Amino acid sequence: MNKLHIVSNRLPFSIVTQQDQISLKPSVGGLATGMKSVYKDFEGRWIGWPGVATEDFSASDFEKIDTMLQKEGCETVPLSSYEVETFYEGFCNRTIWPLFHYFNQYVDYSPEFWESYVKVNQKFADKTIEVIDDGDYVWVHDYQLMLVPGMIKKKRPDIIIGFFLHIPFPSYEVFRFLPWRNEILEGLLGADLVGFHTYDYERHFLSSVRRLFGYEISFNRIHIEERIVLADAFPMGIDYDKFHNAALQTISKTLREKSQLHQELEKVFFVSPERKLILSIDRLDYSKGIPHRLRAFEKFLEKYPEYRTKATLVMLAVPSRNSVPQYQQLKREVEELVGRINGLYGSVNYSPVWYFYRSLPFENLVELYSMSDVALLTPVRDGMNLVAKEYVASRINQTGVMIISEMTGVVKEMAEAIVINPNNEDEVAEAIKQALEMPVDEQRARMAVIQNRLKRYDVFKWAEQFVASLKRIAQIQRDFISK
Ligand code: ADP
Ligand code: F6P
Image 1 (cartoon, helix red, strand yellow):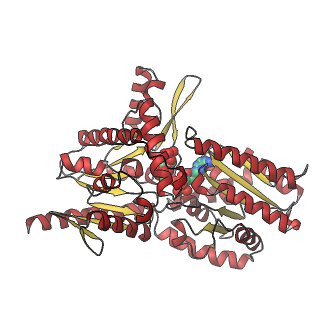
Image 2 (cartoon, helix red, strand yellow):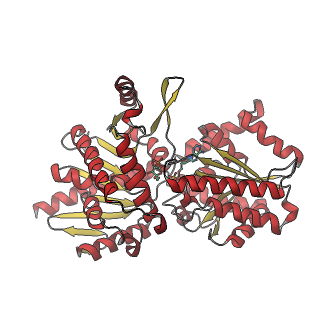
Image 3 (tube, helix red, strand yellow):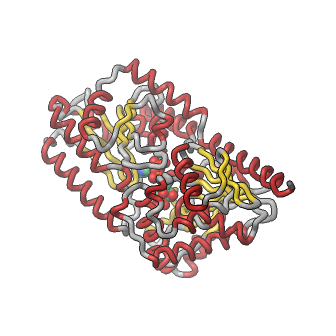
């Protein structure tokens, strides 16, 4: 059987060192959590960066890391601290990430970042070429590696390559700002299949290709001399059963023994039994609209004083990209807002916002999903937002209300949720009230429809359909060449 190799910047495991002991922990972020459920089925390798700079470890420790990851099916691409700074923190997260999320004011077009991006992408391409055998497939992921498909195709035109973008592809009017827009498109067009979460992102991509290169495009096929490149939408799913079953277990386990988190949360209910929990979970990222959410919650408490002891926002933010200045600034802003709201409306018995700045183990995550009455997710831009899907999958008795931003990819699959514009804080405040007061029958009716949809199109279906398309395009490519 032909193998399929995954190539992504972030591997499914990150390195932790505690008292000189090196171990692996699961990585956070949609790409890693989603792909982790499916990659073992492909019988290939997962090629990526272990998440640490080479200089931070001795050569022997680095070898240890490499061996540990090899055992998990991974091949490492080591990066120096200069590369981490200029490639990962630089071009990936100070150029592409803000531009593709429409944060034009944050974009840094430093040529040094670009040069590093080219070199590191070449490293990933070379490592992949080393690993592949004839007839294997390659699936490259995300914005950190947009040149890799072109680089592999140049040396191995026979290899069929898929690319999936986990973040939005912006409108041409935004994409055109990028000084290296042609190079990025050329890199992506090295793939045979380019996938996006939504049809809108696909349309933006095709429009950029048409305007910048003038290639003939029929429906979603791009004709480039002797090749065809297919663009398509594949909304990424989650491992639905894993969340659903874990939530079932959480409920039965809670009857026997309560986790510390559970006991802590129970104190919230102790003061007022009818107290409601509103949950938000994200990486601490400016694209997630966290300050918008806090301001809207403050407005809600201001406007509806009867909820001042009855509604608590549990906000879980996982540290992310701490060395990038905008992330440091965001952390300060969030802490200030939390402090202000708790100072204004808190009392000895009541903290309006419970803010956790850390990553939680899977069991606790599911526990939080299961215990919360409302999920409040307010990204100002988000390629998909898998957290929204995880919340839905964890609602065993089908109660619970989802408030979701219209600026996410996931909203296309959640018309039954309460859909808001995160920039409209009054609207979000009203949505919170509506969610807290929604009759149980209505909650169940809405949740049931979303659950059925997400269960049918889970991450396995998503991967299966992408790979099936990749195989189809391999056939089309062969037919096209033999004509
Ligand atoms: P992104 O890819 O931008 O981070 P997603 O919502 O698509 O956003 O995916 C985030 C993933 O990271 C989810 O699978 C979620 O469970 C996980 N995650 C987010 N925050 C935490 C946290 N504090 N602790 C553990 N896992 C988290
Ligand atoms: O899903 C989008 C994404 O950017 C992934 O590419 C990435 O792995 C994840 O979010 C988390 O970001 P990072 O890898 O920078 O920690």
